[in-house]
Length: 308
Image 1: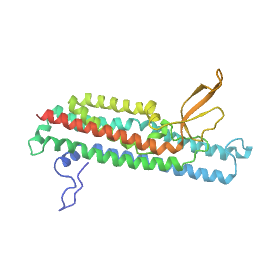
Image 2: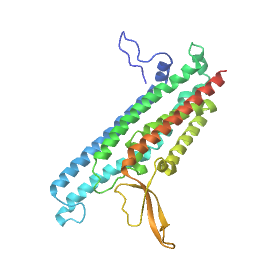
Image 3: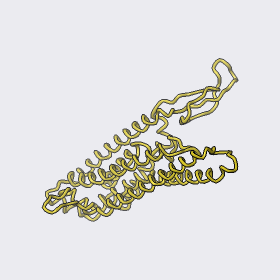
């Protein structure tokens, strides 16, 4: 990021922070441009889809099994909602890659490249301590990435929550949507940055650091997605004909023997109600931030040993 200055005014960033911004300004500005394009496309298509929904509601036609005169307006509405859903799903395919990409950027070009080329020694000999050097390599990317990710999450949640889902249902617990609906994506991005710093200091090789960081971050994300997320809160169990609430996340189901009736079995479902969305998001985010803090602490310890 170029350091914004006005004639006669001091730069917004100074010292090693200015150096970090100067070295990686193109990548940081490119991330901002990509965010603006994605948010613009998302909100624009959301507005178009809501307009189509309003027009369709005015016709009085049902979504399914309408009379012949409803075929054209129904098809137009289906097409609008399909395009909106397709964009959401494209974004959702990209979201799991974002933390790994940010982490790989910090691990490789920001930290490991300097260690590999030896340019870090120049900073260390110019009254910049190793700890201050590492902090400057972490602070600016973290602030930039967290700000952009939070802005995207707000726009995504606005479009998803208020967008029509009459034709194509969307559930809060779907892996396609969960990452973009709350703070957990920011938690993964912060973890990616912290893991990237630690791996870079351990490997000191650009390509290796990028690859190891990406694999590690994706492994943690998959672990939560496949297994750990459902264990963060106690589930509710219903058996037999008991009804579970709408929009609940079923994490397990099967057959169980009926108490007091040997040989008789009934079905059971274990689920998280929709009221668990925010607690699950906040708990998972907290765990990720705790892991990130441990990774940063370990990175500074490795740096101290390297400097010694």
